[in-house]
Amino acid sequence: MATQHSRSAARLMMAPAVILLLGWMLVPLIMTLLFSFKKYLPLRGGDIGWVGFDNYIRFVTSSAFWPSVLTTLTIVGGVLVITVVLGVFLAILLNQPMWGQGIVRILVIAPFFVMPTVSALVWKNMFMDPVNGLFAHLWKFFGAEPVAWLSEASLSSIVMIVSWQWLPFATLILLTAIQSLDSEQLEASEMDGAPKLAQFGYITLPHLGRAITVVVLIQTIFLLSIFAEIFVTTQGSFGTRTLTYLIYQRVLESQNVGLGSAGGVYAIILANIVAIFLMRMVGKNLDA
Image 1 (cartoon, rainbow, N blue to C red):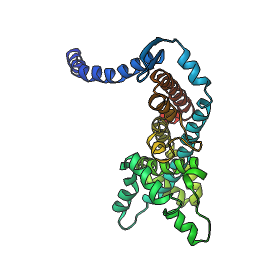
Image 2 (cartoon, one colour):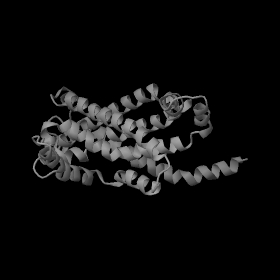
Image 3 (spheres, helix red, strand yellow):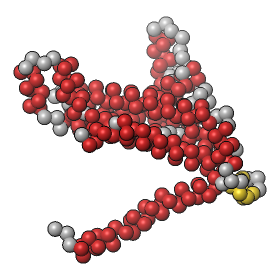
Image 4 (cartoon, rainbow, N blue to C red):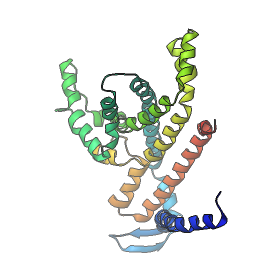
């Protein structure tokens, strides 16, 4: 049993790491809040002065704000549906005994370790190029006209690219959950004559509830700040400009740090609203 002295020593040893972590988080946040109330143009006069909530009003009333929020939520929702559904399917498939099972699992999980920029470049040049891409050759083989994916189906293409990168993460978490399932439950259901679909619906899927919740929460946090895939492929064109990319345009392309900082605050607010909503809707599974 820990004594008061040992607890105090533990807090003392943890203090430097906690202080460093808080500084790492709070300093950029405070600077963002500070700049959001200023008119700061690095190449056009620098710090011009305080403007109050003018940056917030200009950012939220711009014609690009709400479309960027809708695009962000659409990408997040599409990726979550694809990764969860296919992740469950792949996890069940990889849990079956097969030859070379370890190698297959490594190959399935490998895309998660590819950098987003590299992943987007591969998809853009090797798969979705309307002239030399793999999809274009497949379309021509079947006598169809090749599709310019990144201009004609831009949002779907982004969802496909991001889903390919995040599917291994969902598969890994769900596979771990399936492996913890008590095999005696499945054996008992088979002895009772339950079909495979009923076993999945009444035993496997409820058991995966907590794992699915973890996948949804973690992926949502990261997907709300998606940027690299869009920067490499469409650069925000054809209806793919997310809130993060809009902030980038305001800060770097328009050289308006104050306006971009206000957008960053809106992004933080959006992330917290989505996180609270998800915790209320699906977070109950964590306590089940």
